[in-house]
Image (tube, rainbow, N blue to C red; front, side, top):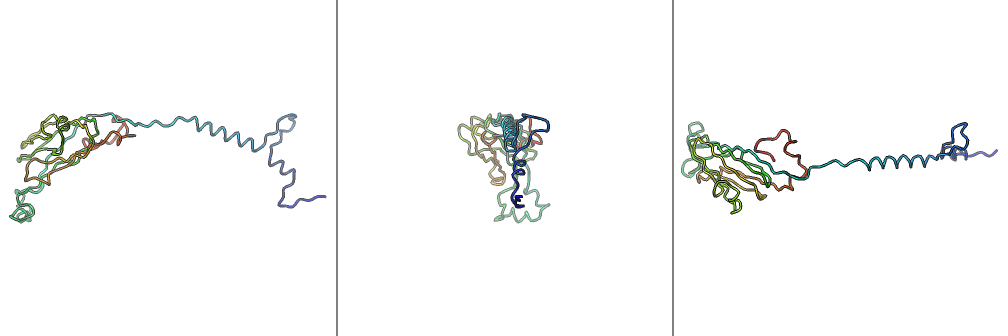
Length: 215
């Protein structure tokens, strides 16, 4: 009797591994090979994956109106020398704040996107006069400001309104127009391009947005 080594399957074993025999009692039923069955499964899976609709992505930015509130803030001034004794030396002749006082804008970084209309509410709660000025604006930028020369005076203890239409992408420094408050009292208006906002959700679908501080 011919014996096969343990490492070599018998012919009948090869047949049982390569094909699935027809059910008992079924004459003429086709024999389905295991390889053909696997191929059919893979084709079905590939067809299902290919028919799935791709996820939609928002790629166009719709300009919006932004309400931005900016407040002037008193930081280190001469009136505070009694509270902070070290300021006496700072404000003295030759001191680090000689001829200066430290104020700020809050917030100091503002963000918009090309095409946006920005409504500024500028609050000066102090008894000192300030200004809100964008010094590097061009004639085109001047035309986008409702107020002339890209600047506005901020009288003491008053609220001033201004409107700006963002027409060009870029970083625009702004500052106080009072010389002794410079260079400390300053900030920046960042105007993003619409391409930078590609894929961002429309305004109505955003959540946890910060007023005046986020695109």
